[in-house]
Length: 185
Image (cartoon, rainbow, N blue to C red; front, side, top):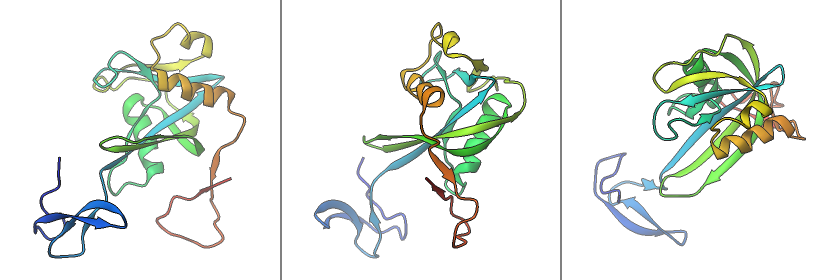
């Protein structure tokens, strides 16, 4: 779908060469539509050697076991998104410890998915009954007998066999940057 009107001022858009790439640009103001993107997040929460999984009750992926996750809201810090998603989907409280994996999926709406390593805090996995119809902690052996989504199988391998601690939250950056989520090696 082509962008026809400017989201900043409402005037018509035209296709213009911007640094060698055709982009939709406003005919009245300086707005340029840089593309369509989405950012997904996923939780890798382990407890006693088992990974938290939920079974999808809706499409996409209905019937598959996946790690809890979702999409960020426009004004929501990404760390708050994943904490909220885990709580909403299965009633488990967990805190972010680092970034464990990243998936880049170029397509019509370019998707970037960030998987967070999280520490379990509290709660028994209880499905929300809307997005999720089952939830629990599962060992790799148990997961081998389950209908686990392919991408989640990869993430489980990252969680169980990852050799890196990933990108860790920078709790004390050298320069305070309020409003930024900062992670570093």
